[in-house]
Image (tube, rainbow, N blue to C red; front, top):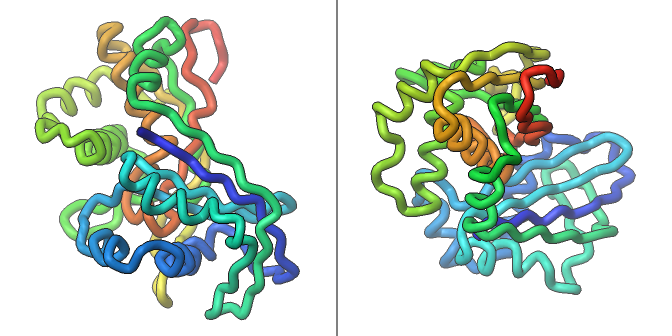
Length: 253
């Protein structure tokens, strides 16, 4: 089961945005069961992602990838008593003025993306800074292999599919895809005094392989709206929106 909790926020503090996501991770851990928080700390791939958005409409989005994560992470945040919190490091008082939950069963995700809805074009927006890591170094270009590998790893961990990522499938998916449009900029993500090099923006991907391959790419992209893409998605990096999943080549992306 996939789920998303959107918290609409208000604060008088001017310094609120995605750069507070790592501090919000601390707020989250304070709200959930301590034993479960300890289990999450030891896990490699987390069963959730979260990020903050600033601007005129401030939001905190928490997304879970399993039924257990929903019960242990999102459910406590739905408590009516949870109406405000403080980011201690910034002395920032934040009020919660709205809560919205979206739940998507995996079967619904499969049915949606293996129907005729999804075609050969994907348009992804990275709404918070994203990056990958290879051989101990940060990668700040959205290379298709890294994008697909990240989505497959997270999907495999969430669904207990030990065959993912399958190297042959990853190679085929990468080979039959191409980035046909992009609007990106380099940026950084602050974490405990370190600035992680990263990127933000939009990319358009065209899949030229079989229909099954194109639908599988759409499925992974739909899942990635919940899991995020790349490193450190549990502390606010790699948040994405699937802007479009188009059928006709004549449509713009």
